[in-house]
Length: 577
Image (cartoon, rainbow, N blue to C red; front, top):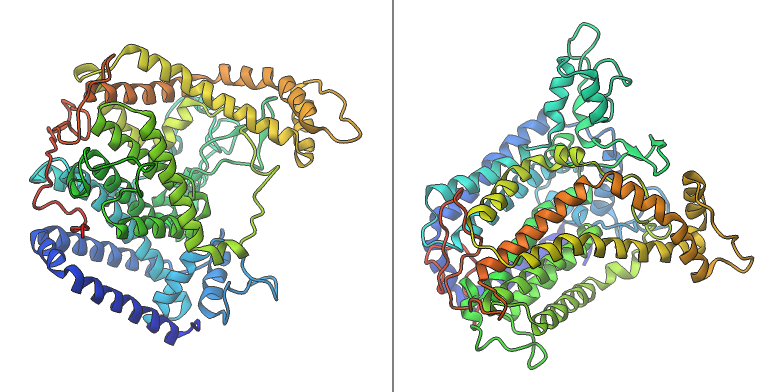
């Protein structure tokens, strides 16, 4: 298929033909779903159109494709649009192809070609689509989450769904509030020194970049600092000025007009989370899962073929995860893990306990997801060569993130998560205290063990010798002499042992974030166990029970699930044969 308008039209014709075939197979169910959920569909379409038009106006007032990485993104966009062959030709290295996850550029370039607009206009229209598509993904996910638990979504459900729609493209992190406080001279020097943020320190610039000596706005780039909150330190105490952790968020990328792969993948990341919700509902025997068979019909994957609501659903799952890895390869492990976890939690909820069979089924599904996604997008992987590897992908060998910096970055979602968990811990059902303690202690120890193992692998690799040696010199650790034949596994183990005291010292000095996250995860598992009623005998609910999807909270309305889906639930149409 040629990379031109004719090829794009041929692709559209293929999609139309497949859609017509699917409609003939079960069009009545789709039409019935549309009639039952007309209000939801119209609201979603209207919300998308309004946000899309709003951001078209924003980009029309700032259409430049300059600064930061936008020239690179525009080059890839043009290459995907005009290249006569695929993989697209590299815009810098003549005769080479792009070795990058470029699927997002392919999609937006094809849509731009079909719309008959120049690449520069197509680039800015694609930014508006990303804003509206991501907001719509958040809206649909929240709406379906609530609809899966009650027959009528009500005013509260609509409000929360629309709040998610608006919050995703607009919400940021706490740096903006601190920026205003710093610019107005609020707070003592000791407070700003304790926060120790980029350019918000007494020893840094005298004023923030958006104010001149008269206190008037002087630059339009002051908001950039919101994406660079953490000031990095080496284990030895040296400031790392050239390596600043990036804490970008959707609102930042949308204002910047960024078309990096992690932004292009945002709408599809929400689609992936919606699929994870669907896997959970099916595995737990509710909503569409009711048609996939309850606990009696759902056999082990070791006893029969993998049981899914429908083969088409499994195919869609594989297509989405493969597409996400093609869109942004860093997502390749995150989203399959979400699906596997959703399936395991659903099975746990259905059976009342987490059994070895559930672990086995989840493992088989995870392997199946990854393999099928790889095979579906094999041409991309055959030509893909990443520069990310040892010693570039290393364990965290800097000072651990401070709790205050973590709260500045993730404070907004935590404003909902922490009160919800605390309210349930105080007034809801709880599991055994041994469960909480085992997760609180075991989780950080398990992560530390993984870090040590990975450090050992890096230290035993010749590509990592220099990094390990430099780190040892910085913290004053004494390494054994490097053998003339190479370090090997023995030298790597000795190097890790020599560096371990410095690593543990830093972890214990800045342990607040570890305690906070471990307690949060342990409490969530503890509450989950309590809601399932899992006692010492492992008795719990089954697939047909009315156990709520989320723990009960006095802060939220009571969302109770039932064994049959709500008639107006906007879950996927009937996928059963």
